[in-house]
Amino acid sequence: AGAYHSVALLEDGSVFTFGAAQLGQLGRPTSGATDGAGLPVDATPRPVELPSPAVGVGAAFYNTFARCRDGGVYGAGENQYQQLGALSRNVHAMTRIAELDGEPIEEMAGGYCHCLFRTTDGRVLTTGAGDDGQRG
Image 1 (cartoon, rainbow, N blue to C red):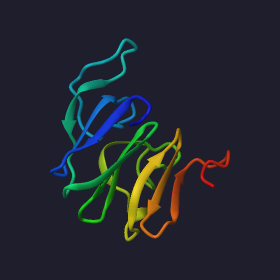
Image 2: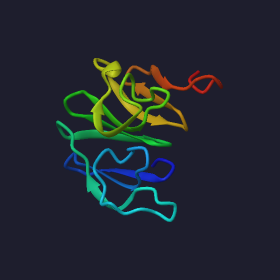
Image 3: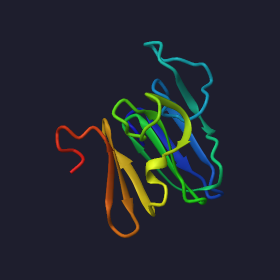
């Protein structure tokens, strides 16, 4: 789970997200509902679009990740510090993180403005802000 959103992986490889959506972290269109501050939310779990079934998911404060059977790692949400690589500032649809292509990613997580990706051979790759040492 992220700060204000959740991600779920179903047995068939589909991925559902729900919760706050102000920075695109749900990775899909929302229902149009807003919270008391007028920010977009979607409390109903709904699927995200991915090119192949997911085999793993993760989340950071304002990000959602999916690792797909095709080997790609996809993400959505805040990208102010390039947590999702060299993409636009905020990413509102699950988008392949090109910087991770070819890496055997096993686990995905993160914090407020940084993300961590553990590989099957034990390495930890990081993206995002690191000025306080949070990237190692």
